[in-house]
Image (cartoon, rainbow, N blue to C red; front, top):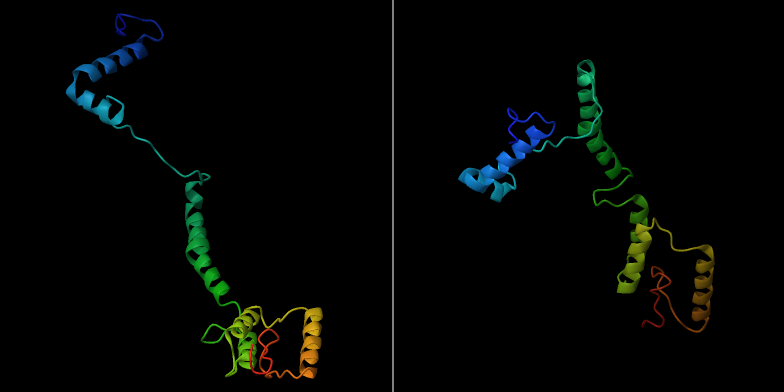
Amino acid sequence: KYHPDKNTEAGAAERFMLIKKAYDALTDPVAMRNYRDYGNPDGPSRIEISVALPSVDKQNQGLVLVLFLVLFIIGVPLTMLWCMTGGSVDANGLTPMANEVLGRGISPSLDVRTAQDLVLRACAGGESGNAAEEEALTSLREQLRSAGASFSSSASARGATAGGKK
């Protein structure tokens, strides 16, 4: 009834193909397995996946390839190396300012809290706080000294020892 040779209606050919596929899926063992495994009696369907890039004519493909190589294969690694070695560092990876801060702050009487403060100041580039905070700490230090407390010269304000004990 729907065969394209017998029926000349507009949708007869498509309808005939659907009926044929359904019949095959019910009677042909290969088509049944394909329908069960892939959801289609014809077997797995092919899907084309591509990247949406602008089209480049044949004359400029070489130029695009060279630009890609320069930008991604050479440029990105060189940029990473430049960023990783941006500042002047020694063999230990420390900047001169961090070396200076650590050199001034390390002493035999260094405790854990002072060491933490020292490492934080070295990472911050030697900044120990704002001027008002430093002034308040200096004032407090003077008041404690007048009360009989002693401070080592290399200890920071937070790790200062009063009378040899914390």
